[in-house]
Length: 238
Image (cartoon, rainbow, N blue to C red):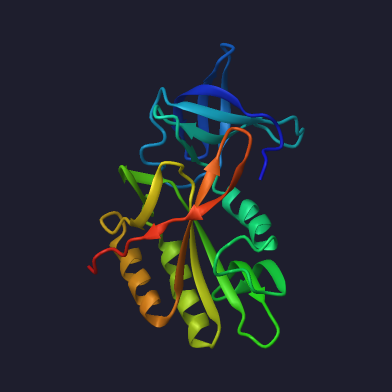
């Protein structure tokens, strides 16, 4: 997925009200950017961090910049826009590029299911159970090489695991797909200390037959594309 307009670099001044960030651009301007990430962004919103913004000239948008990336001192990138995974993964799925999710005839997005929820992707093929795919963006890393989810308590995420479990009970296939939006991680686990309820729900869902797929990303200021599979390390049971 290529960014629609070339990204511009800056330095983060502060993130506030979850969806706003003040940034000093390299040309000296200080602007407010939209932050499309409702999570805590632990480790990604420290003042002074190098960030990349996508400008826009859409008259319907009040903010003319969107925060897309963090560039770490190591040269690695983290994608902070939680809308990117679904857009990028749709293209990857359509091109049959996601291992384990490459055998289907039709793909639909945002299909109602569960209790007032919408599944990210519903894959169907003649003569086989439907495959329900829920996608989560993973950006937290507190240990070198290890990504973790979630970065804050997620009751919504726990609800999704229960709904995927119900799909398995009804005879369908269900997949929890974690997209690691970091270029510096090859393994992934769950942050059970941050949200033990979610970790327990994941264990319950796994035992019921919900599958887990973790994929990495290739990230540059020009584009975000699907990377290699990431090893999922199951957390200890609480």
